[in-house]
Amino acid sequence: MNLRLAKLVSITLLVAGVAATVAADEKERQCSAPARVCEQEIRRMLTGRLYLGVQLMELNPGLLVKGIVADSPAERADFKAGDGHSTTDSTIKDFKQLLSAARSTGMLFVIVQRRGALRQITVRLEPYTDAQIDKIIAQHLATSHAQTATTNP
Ligand SMILES: [Zn+2]
Image 1: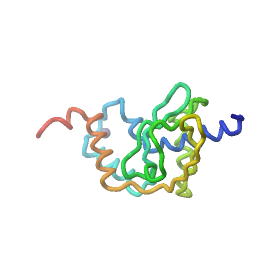
Image 2: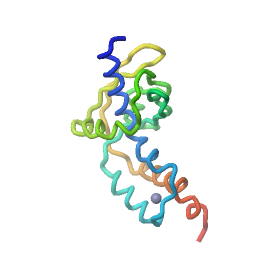
Image 3: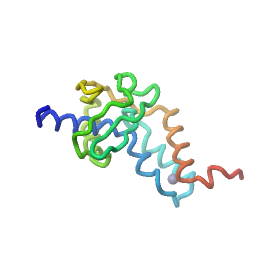
Image 4: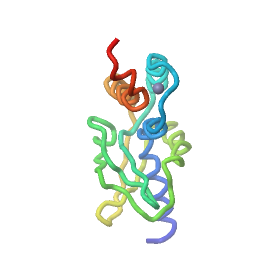
């Protein structure tokens, strides 16, 4: 593989991690804010926001598609769990700026490595549905508000 292609792979795959960013950022710490405030804030942030719908994991080096959100743009575009590459030092942190670029057009062109072959995937980003936002909120409450989420008033 030549260097230019390797670089393209690394940049384009990064954008695929967009949907995982919120969860990854908040996964490992407990929120000090009330759950209800968080719920409103997350809903406000995600409503109308374009997303892709893949879950990424960081390898060392590289990124790997760990899972695909059901009924997401990623699923419609034929992303598969296991897509990825291991030739760059890209991190999940890097793709926030790339996300902005993809959102300006709503279109994402991704090249992934699947079973050793390169494959181009074109995705039309879509806004989160209410059901998906509910799910993300529920997950946040379960991981970062564990006590309040499991306590009945
Ligand atoms: Zn919270």
